[in-house]
Length: 292
Ligand code: GLU
Image: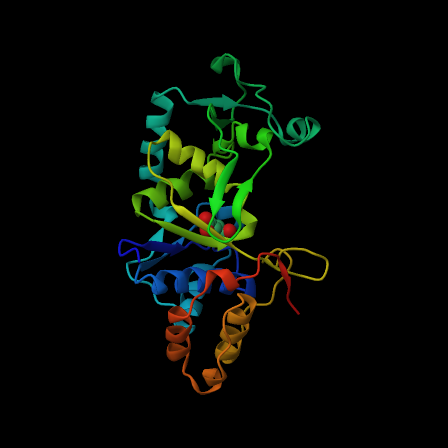
């Protein structure tokens, strides 16, 4: 048991929660409760163009309705710009950031990964606006996932000088997720497998900041018939709050958790308590699964 266990669910308010996000929230909640840990919710509202008005409060309300209650005040990334900028300024002062004015098209033409084009450019010659990249000298290509075991990404991906601040002036997800996970002392990150690859980038930042890595567990994705991740972009249905118990039972089944015949008689609270106690990682399927 890790009594210092701290986990989190970190939704982006780009729409209502859907079945895939319920699975991620539930998995991270159950893992935290199973370890007598602390469970936090952080609203990742750093990308206003992708935000849907009212989504943050709808997400929080839905989590509460499902009995997924958090232990500390909700953190909103939109209120932490000064913190992000001061941490970014430290990286700039260390000389591990540089400006890049490559267009998306140029990068796509080069095969989709940025190949260091702007590395030796005179900063004064850069077009404005431009993005800020991390000088990635010790890219990590491999890590141990608690469910998936040794996970490896392509070396070129691992070594890419990824973006810390976007051309439009917004902080990049990779930067703020790491700064917040460190600052909130998160020990265990349990989330969907769509973030498997970028975990290596996040670990590269941990390594650069000389902070011990979090532990990672990536849950199977809920996919539609054409193999797409269930997401707000492909119009995944919002969760019907009238079917909360049934949806929780379905999400537990999706996570391969022991199905008790008592479930039907349980309240939502009892269901969560039972599922936390019996939480079993070895029973979680490793593959993405279809959702009707
Ligand atoms: N905000 C991210 C998303 O909604 C998740 C971040 C994370 O769990 O690291 O996809």
